[in-house]
Amino acid sequence: MKAYSLFNYYQADTILHKELHSVCHNAKRSRELLTLSKKETTSVPAHTKGIWSSPYWSLTIGLMLFTLGPAFEELAVPIVLPNTVAQLGGLAWYGWTFSMFMLTSLVGIVIGGDQADRHGLAVAYGTGMLLFDLGLLVAGVAPSMAMLLLGRAIQGFGAGTLASLGNTAIGRLYPDTCKPQMLALLSTTFVIPGLIGPSFAGMIVALIGWRWVFLGLLPLGPLAMLFVVSSMKLGSPFPQRIQEQRNANGQRIVTTGQLVLGATLALLGLAIHSIPLLLLFVVGGLTMGGMALRRLLPSGTLTARAGLPAAIATLGLLGLTYFGERAFLPLALTSMQAQSSLVAGMAVTAATLTWTVGAWIQTRVVSRYGRRPLVLTGLALLIVGTVGTTSLLFPSVPVVVVVVAWAIAGTGMGIAFATANLVVLETAPTDQEGYAVASMQLSTTLGFALGTGLEGAIIGISTEAWKSLTGGTIMITIIFLASACLAVLAAFRLPGKTHEPISSLAPNVLERGDSPA
Image 1 (spheres, rainbow, N blue to C red):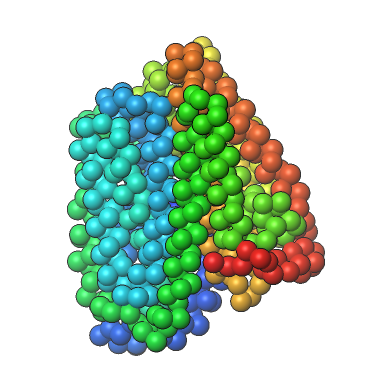
Image 2: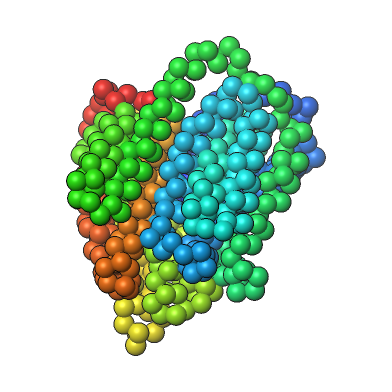
């Protein structure tokens, strides 16, 4: 029986992220990396014992530092943002601090891979580091909410660029025997910010102010660059393939830009009071983004066709529900229950821990119960936890109830998310695993961006119409519960028992007019 014991951050990072993946992702990615035959030339001998031996230890430390910065920031921002809004104003733009980051990170992911192929890893990492640090600086000194949003957008470009380079660096710079160790180490590195990041961010806010959550990370990028630059040479490692890939990479960037622009227009439209303009922005944005999405995702994803498309659709809806609610919860705790940033951080940390527990649970029982039942179980827990967080509407209910409810939601997310990831990897054609993983990352990151954007629009409507967050909390809960219910419908089209033939579940999934970009 297979053991699925490692978790991986998929960024976008993501981003996308940046949370945990199942071990199957790491196992298959390791096999893919082991097939790489062309590597950047380094002075490192091939007989090295491991990732901490003298030729590799500095590269290993540098890659860990590049991982820690964006991961910590992604988890810390929801904790500090209520204090930021209290000082700068602009509550109506609360959700955009997340959406801008995630949307620009999508473009950064595509640009990062293109830079690595054209100019080598040193240039790509340097570009990502400079952009991320510039974004941190702009956000840390921002005198207004508009400037903070600009900083977050720049951060997203940088974080997306860095997120796209981790596996590439491992594939090109480490010998085959070290690659599985390095994948496992980077997976573990993502756990650290999840365990201490939210609470630590709350302590920073209480002691020296929210700006230092941004400014305090500035040294990490240059320090990481010092560790890795000696192992990376300038120039492309594949000069003969540059011209072949130029058109394809350019088309991916254009299509991703179209998706980002469409999502931005749709979310901006929700804040417009004029009905004709609202319809123009929302319908136009959804049309533009939908056309791009059809070219970027496997055929049948938007209708949750059985197999791979249903799994990718489920992941997108999971991202919308969980990450949208997670971004709102610290604001609700600090504004409606007058809790400190430290308490809000504890709630986020609790869900991060139980996410890990849920992911481990699925590794133990997935072979016995099958994929579909586990995803449905996880979704049920996510729904229960989301409903439970509405107890913050009642001041007489202890705040520990909210923390426990969100911990339950984290458990459900861990189970459902890891199992859906497994389905993507199992149903992907053997020569299209990379495309399937990229689609998975795109779907989840877009769900994150849309969830936080919807939440921000609702907060703006609630504070303007009712002068409080109570009505907005109810609206947000209803929308996220509706998203979870759509995920349930998509999950019913996932494989059930493990002996079901995968090929019958996703016929011709990649034969589509919207071919891989």
